[in-house]
Length: 108
Image (cartoon, rainbow, N blue to C red; front, side, top):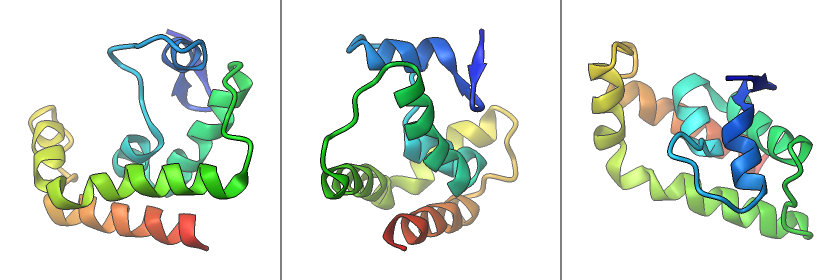
């Protein structure tokens, strides 16, 4: 598996080509797993792999915000499988803090 900007290149290429990929990341997942900077890097990797983002910056921001806010009500359900997979530092509160930090970065 090749990695582009810290993101699975095959998964990003599949997304860029409009195909589904079982391990396809999104910016919010990466931000919650690794911190806000990783969420921001996803868009760069997507474009480098040939993906075409929304033309308007405000539309890109809107989509990223919607995606991030979709996690807000279910952070505990997101954190639990990661903890079971060995990422014990990803407590519900820890993931909430990462989500807050990612939303703050998006809004700045």
